[in-house]
Each structure stands twice: as structure tokens, then as C-alpha cells.
Image 1 (cartoon, rainbow, N blue to C red):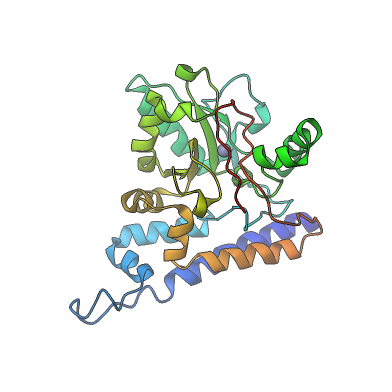
Image 2 (cartoon, helix red, strand yellow):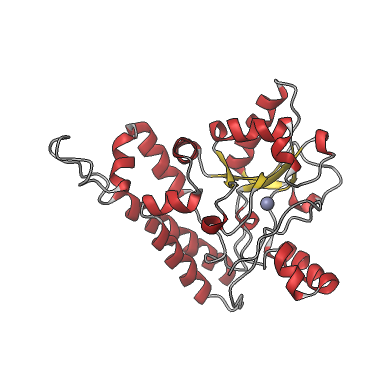
Length: 292
Ligand SMILES: [Zn+2]
């Protein structure tokens, strides 16, 4: 089937491009460590610090697509559906059953993370995780219908621009804040635990406070993204965003190119620049930023 085939080709090209980009050029090391740091690119520095096992793991994670960048400039094709979605065990029961899935590896790590929190008497659930293109489209259309285009663009991501479509993202909540999504999560016990420990399970808090000029989104303490164990640790240790990590490791352009190639191949037109937020149907107190 054409769609299937295109998806496979897309995944293959993506994996290949990423692998080539990050691992060519990173192997070179200076003959002496003395002549050094200034000569090394950030990518080489990263590679040099990694153990062999980590380097291998990162390569695998890239091949598996866990480092894919989806944001306002990097859209997903409308027919992109992760192949190995697995239903989560811990979710808010009043939310859509269609959005209870993550890619298999992300789901496994999600379960480990939630169970580790439970051992400290902290409850964490997913409110929405994977959202299909259609799901996002319905959500966005709903906002356009009820609030008008301008407001809709402030509270909902246009279809194709939501990172939730990757199957690597979960929005989290907890009983302490009645399972809403919103900035209150950041100061809840669960939110603090996530900020401190999620990297240990391969997740990052994707939209950190004060970095919306880079990520395009205001602080979302509840939105975690699976990037694999190696990248999550490095992103956490360096206190950087996924955008910066991808740029430092020379992944950005290839992703952009691959995704845009895939999109050009796609009939669906997602047109112009997007707008704000991630499309949480969440509680009120989330501030929304308007910047061009
Ligand atoms: Zn989210």
C-alpha cells in the first residue's frame, strides 16, 4: 500500500540520515588531547565523552527514531503513525482511550518511571500520550469552531506540528492536582519528582522554563518526551533543550530535510507557520505566549 510504503521509506531515510550525520566526523579525535578543545566541535566533544556502550546505544536510539525533532518548523506527515504503539498501564481514566499509547520502548520506560515514583508514594498518570494526526486535527478544529482561529492558534497545535504524534510524548498529571494539566504540576510532588528523575528513564521535560524562544513553547512541566537513556542524560546534565542537543550533534538539518522531503511527498498541506501551544485541553492557568 502506498501509505505504508511511504512510511517505511520515510523511517528508513530518517534513520540513515541521522546515523550518517552523527557518526561521521565524530570518530575523529585529536592526536593529542593538548591541542584540543577549541579544535573539537561540540559533536566531537559529545562523542569523546561517551563510553563505547553509550555511543552504541545512542546510535541505536537514533536508528529507532527516538531523536526525531517535531516542532513548529519540523512537521510530521499526516500519515505518520508509529508502528509499535503499546497501551499504557497508568493513565487518567476520564481522558480519551485513543490517547493512551506510546511506542513500545517509551512505554516500557514510562512504566518503570511511574513505578519508581510509586515507591516513593508519588502517583503519576498519563493524561494524553500518542495523538494521531486526526485526533489533533479534531482537537484543533474544535478550538477553531468554539473560540475562533486566533484563540485556537494560542491553545492548540495545528495537526502535524504536535510532538504527541511521534508516540514518544506523554502529558502527566497526579491526584494532588486532580489530574489536570497545567503549571500546577510543576510544583506538585509528582512534578518535582519528574523534573529530577525523568532523565533516568530516558525522558526529558521537553519545554523548560524560560526557553520558549528555542522550543517555541512556554514552560510545560507536565509534557515529557522520550529520547532514550543516553540523550536524556546528556540533555539533563547540560541543562539544554532537545533543539540544542540536536544542533550540537549535527542532527538538525538532516531531520529537517528528511521531514520536509517526506512532506513534499505528501499531498496534505499543512501550510504556514504554526502557532502556539501543544494542544493540551488543559486547565486554565497555563500561560500562552505569543511571539512571532
Ligand atoms: Zn503535551
